[in-house]
Length: 388
Image (cartoon, rainbow, N blue to C red; front, side, top):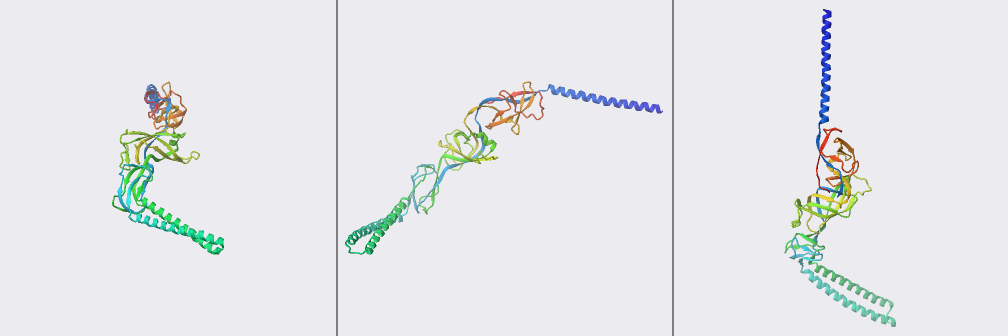
């Protein structure tokens, strides 16, 4: 009985061992099979070729709010009734041009009174001059004392001062009279007229708004990485904007007759902090040359700013650069996936400059390859792009 039990136990152990060995065998075969399939599998990936070509570094902006470099209200310098408005919104006026006329009947009267005061002062000065000349003669003859002469001379000086004051008062009265013709202080376009004819306006009342849109400004807060795409700073940049998607501040006919994508010269007026000071962000003030008359103050979207063409650079699509900006995946000449460490330079929103790590002709991967491993077989599907 004991011998039979031992035999059965041994048989069971042999069978268990056989199952384990068979399982190991199957696993080995499966792994080998999977590896064999993996080795034979070729994954297609979107890719492009690193090329050396002309490069226009720049930035893209979702939207900016433009303001005129110069815009001001026309202000009344005297009070009066608004008798006549000589312009309408949309008119272009010159500096010094009369834009409206006020009527204040007290101003001509003030001029007349001042003129009378001047004539009176002139007579007093003439009389004082005659008295002084007589006093000099009498003093030389010893007929009057020095004190009497000094008194006569003082009266002459007082008469001259009164005449000067009267002439100044007359000049002020004439200036106030001239202010009835309200003039523009700048060349520009009439944007708004605040008042209507017949209204009484006080001193300092705004009559209309005039703006010079030949030059517009806006501000951007750029990360240092984005700002570096504009370096080295150029005298002129190319500013392109979508005219169809804008929100006008005034009811003008600006943008009429222009293509939907409008391009104008732009320049950087100033930025802070300076390049000598490390910073994550820099505030940049831009000026747009709007002498073509396509833009007006307001919100504009879908904007790109580029510098002039530079010397040829080695470029790859921005999408091919991994997060962190220091590596790309490439397809080796043997058709294997590999990872390369790179140093990037400037970008234009679509392409990025490769300073180190790649050679012209290298094939960079644009697809998501997180499910692949270095050394996996891949087949590049090359995407064609227009040269920059």
